[in-house]
Image (cartoon, rainbow, N blue to C red; front, side, top):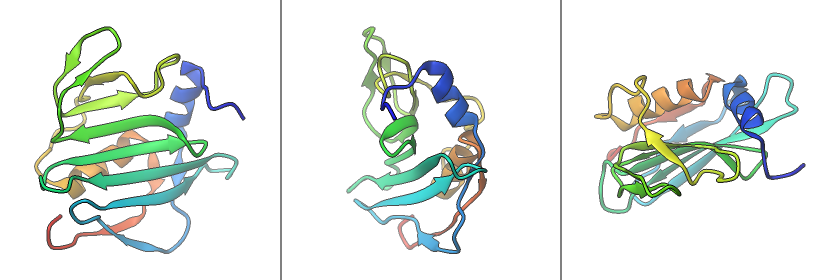
Length: 147
């Protein structure tokens, strides 16, 4: 399979129902930590992953991303980080969302979609991101002390 997608393929993958199918429980990563959770399509023909990365110092710095076909980032949410400069020169302040764009991959950021209405809690924000990425059967992710 090619690592390059058309925009319509990327949209279809983002909208596709995703499921976490084992009984593993996870802990939201501590500062500087990361977590990768496998997800699958209804028919198990497509593999996805939900990646969570935390900043080392700032409690509020988080990156959530949804990857398809092992390495293609179809959506990434950046919270508490620096602004991003798009290929056309436009600067997007943080928080922002990266959406796969044909010819650019995940190099293009957009303003945070309206459905992200609560940025104060990392776990709630992750729930909003999973809903945005159509994660239907969600993994159990527990809080730790500094989540």
